[in-house]
Amino acid sequence: MTEDLINKKDIYFPSYHGTNDNLINLLNRATQSLCDWFSKAEEFGPLPFDENFKCIMPEEDGNTTEDLFSEIESLLNNSFNPVHPCSLAHLDPPPLIFSILGDLIAAGLNNNLLAYELSPSITLLEDSLCKWFAKKIGFSDSSGGIAASGGTLSNLNALIAARHNAGLGSDPNSVLLVSEDAHSSFIKCTRIMGLDETNLVRIKTDKKGCMDIKSLRKTLDNCSIKNKKIFAIVATLGTTVRGAIDPIKDISRICKERDIWLHIDGSIGGIFAITSIPIEGLNNLNQANSITINPQKIIGITKTSSLLLVSDMNTLKNTFSTGLPYISSKDNIINRGEMGIQGSRPAEVIKLWLGFRFLGLKGVEDILKSSIKRKDFFIENICKNKFEICSGPLHIVSFIPKGLRPKDTDSWTKNKVNELMKKNFMLSRPKFKGNYYLRVVMGNYNTTNSHIEELLKFLNAYQ
Ligand SMILES: Cc1ncc(COP(=O)(O)O)c(C=O)c1O
Image 1 (spheres, rainbow, N blue to C red):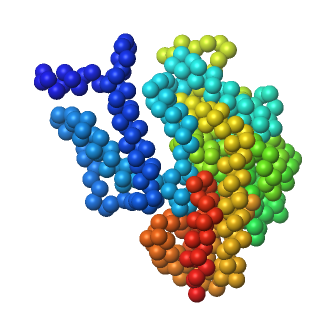
Image 2: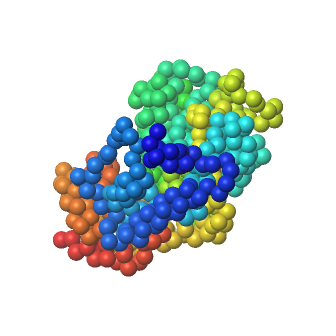
Image 3: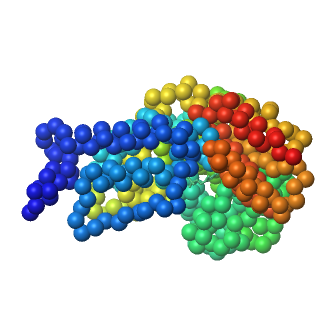
């Protein structure tokens, strides 16, 4: 065995005795690289990707730590940088510092939320934190929840539970109702559930982008005539393009009348419900059967961080519990791998818990309020006679020049995104109702009014 390999073996795995000096040195070095990258954001811009970036694959002999640190640096320097103050394109804010620590601890622990015996403290932590969130939004003692890797999976967990609890199994007549502005992941969810797109019924939205209740009632009546069985209605709490909130109170009344599962996709706006920030339309959440919240999208809990909260934990247990024959279980504790689609799962809850413990509710409110203030400032100062603006009570604004022909919106938004990128502003261009729009998402805590003023100086100069 070469000398090199003998030395390397000291850093294959953490040592179970001694001080793990080698590991500490490596962690310090990795931390330094990461922090250098954060502070280079201003120089590099939000998206410094070099098309010549090389993905070097593993070779017969392992590489040296020097090689690897140089690869790490290259990887960082070619990455999207969410801490840049003008990173305004998506629902991907800067990472909360205590959340970064949470990821480190979770990686080192390498516990597995599949089963209590593989993650005793984390199992209890996830259970308690989900219950805490569920109570905060007004659910009763029977409530709780489960974490999953992202909003799509949380929504999918909810829909599978809804269909199972409606006793519809794989009934090809079962349908799901969502608004026409609901997230595209519902298409994916129905496919995964063995349904086709005709089983996903889209309800019209009104001028503000909210589900139209008259159209909902009409669709429900049509469904009963055609013997379609509705297993859930989804109300979106914060649509992706304009941050609209569906009329939850009316929808929940209809769901109660007809005994239909109400799922709220609160991937964007759900987190506001645990604060006292007044948001128009944010009410009656506790009337739902389930709600997705996705703190990675606005608070900056590092990805992924998503919870499905349910009013009754038995609904998840009934749907997903299979027994785990190779695991020693405890009578009074349900293995978390039996409460959702995922089996093995990392302890993502740690970064959410640490983030919220550090911020406290006041810190959470501060971050959320600041995003609304930035949105308000943007809307107050954008030239209203030049732009058609689509926005709602949350922190997202989509806009295009008034009078632009639909076929010209593609090239206009493409050019503007490119021109803005040269000025280090990163915006997105969603396609929405046949037109492309420019979109700003004001969830970046590093963005100040002077950044917004600079952006608007460019936009408002449009002739
Ligand atoms: C309203 C809404 N729901 C669900 C999702 C899917 O979330 P994820 O990408 O975390 O799976 C998104 C993503 O942006 C969204 O905007």
